[in-house]
Length: 364
Image (cartoon, rainbow, N blue to C red; front, side):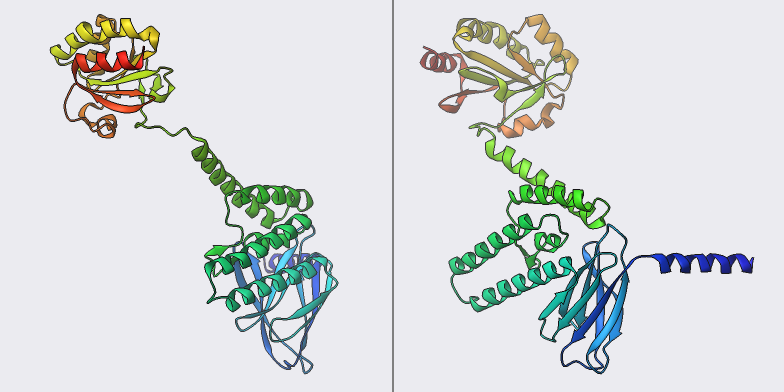
């Protein structure tokens, strides 16, 4: 059994040795025998993965496993200060010359050079914001707009490099993201599609896809809300006799009477026959419709009454009785209650005379 375990361990070591690596030669100016931390992107979090010490010349070498087709983000820190950001592909040999102020140059890796540009742009942005901290909101806004436009140009120009991902997630203190507009979802989608073609196996692209879908959902909701027709009355969407829901705002009529009633009251049933049916027969062809909301908890009794009286208009009932949300929406306190909706808005109707007067005025 021991021999099997040794063989398995040897195989694992062999596989690890065969894993492609990216190699880093880094020199930190004026920092001999210094301690640095190496951090790596893990999902949305940057985690500490190792620590290194520079030699007498402030230099160190480091190798990190990188699978082919799956570049990795790596960061070098001195305490809390980031000295360099790297985007490494399998087999790359990168040379970094840095100082202890956060300035650095790179060679040997296009991704790392783009990351250096990202860091430089963000550093300049933060410096300008700090310089104008006591200035007007308009001045600060101009700084943001200029940086936003620069960031858009960068991600669109380099949309096949994973270096654009930190830019898309960039923000000030985590509360003022650069890409904060709903329409930025379209930029996310364009970049995400390009990255998926270039790096289909990257976990960073998979995470960006989730963020993109979330932003697209927000944009879609915002668009629907903006394009939604503004109604001067509370909307209703309730089931009719056959169970199919009917929306109040779907009725194509010049005047709609929203009539709340109950079939449990004989007087209200007589009102249907003596008042509403004659008025409906007279004015329906001119553009009159009735949306009759029953508040009967017994839907079978209500349906029987509607059929027995042969009520020709829209009849709805959600079966909730006094708990129906429709009553609260229209502030109904007594039954029957009627509201007339027209191009002029919504008005409360009192009795047959009041309804007839309004219909004569609206439906000439």
